[in-house]
Image 1 (cartoon, one colour):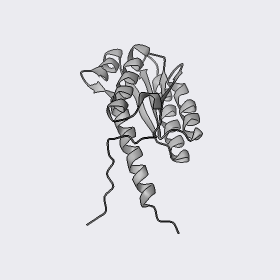
Image 2 (cartoon, rainbow, N blue to C red; image 1 turned 180 degrees about the vertical axis):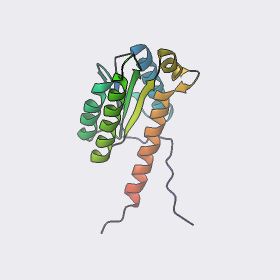
Image 3 (tube, rainbow, N blue to C red; image 1 turned 45 degrees about the horizontal axis):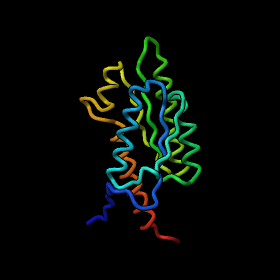
Image 4 (cartoon, rainbow, N blue to C red; image 1 turned 135 degrees about the vertical axis):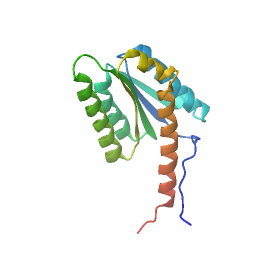
Length: 162
């Protein structure tokens, strides 16, 4: 039977989480932030152990997430934003750059950077995913952060030194 590592949905004492959130489309991103903070608290994290950094737009999320991850004080960084498709292809460039930035930071630092950036066709879709009919993607990103941190901690405890 294989050895399975399953993440627990409970934070641990001493854990700190960073959240970087875009001000652009703040009527959406504030709801994502509220969902993330509420979820972290519901799963045992003291709200005082959360640091929130606001940036102008989603394009600025990766550089701040990278800085937070490199500080070494956060178990995970949750990035929240909303990119709503307009009349041009601008959204494609933003979405690709943001996703690539998060992936690179996660791989280079070992600190998970969670993608809580909505990529929607219109504002109605964004609002539906920020606490509306489709749920709250900020809350989902927080749950993913908690579970990923738990898996990484278990892997660290199970690592065999040469």
